[in-house]
Length: 207
Image (cartoon, rainbow, N blue to C red; front, side, top):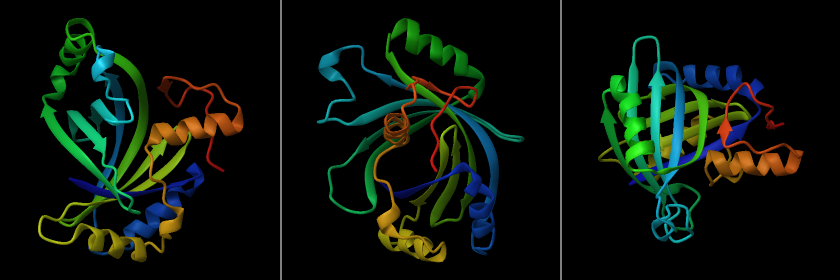
């Protein structure tokens, strides 16, 4: 089970949010990394991950940093509970990042999963044994996400602690995922919606 809350801001807010996080003494800075994430659907429509009943995401993510390269396969599914804090089913599997190209070959040419969308971002991570807080720089704006990690503390209390430390308002949180936010911005700003969301394309922006 995953417990998290997410807020969106204009890209120019990055340095301000970074300084706020640096001032929280019990958080450890874990660097800024570049990520490319691809999201796929089941080749059989009967088992689509994107139906309202399932509402899931099957993802492959490659992460590259100065001293750390990773590759992860993950499954995430929203749980239908009416709370401010998101509760999600999550299963993750790490593989050798050197095998990324072989993995993508199998996904595309053997399993024939359908690529729904892909995106790139820069992720800055702060964490301790109770929480992980990230700043995600998307081509359309900035997301701040707080995720409870403690195995023996109430996850909602953990999140509430850092919401208060960062002087955030629950009413400003955004329950849906990055792709929902991106689509919403495209519609509002009359921008073409791309399946590959990258920094070199004409993107909408959070203002």
